[in-house]
Image (cartoon, rainbow, N blue to C red):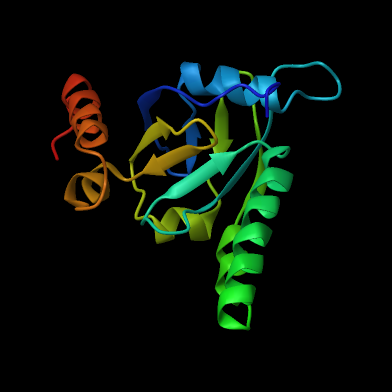
Length: 166
């Protein structure tokens, strides 16, 4: 993991009627560094799926799949030892994700089901968590009771700056 760029930053993106949205620049730079295109052009691939515990999305680069899978398999092995059977939902939820291309300005199309699952409409709030990027519907994030208040405050700030009422 030492050679990976970490996802730090936040921002608010406007989602068009086709589900296109741009990843904020601070997060886009890390994503591009972690998933360079073979032809050397700007852009790359982002994997977008549902978060394992929150009503939001998580996005990450293709190389993170092996890391995520190893983490899930380690948890599953511990549970197998403790309970005598695997928790099949760990891999079901952990494998949630669809690879989609993003262009040089960070625009990508959010896959339909994950977007619907997370209630993402016209706006998407992005938050880096070192390993991945969370993507939230601002209202869903503000109403959530089990998330960091600083993250909620950042979402409120970005909405205020763009004139979006919550």
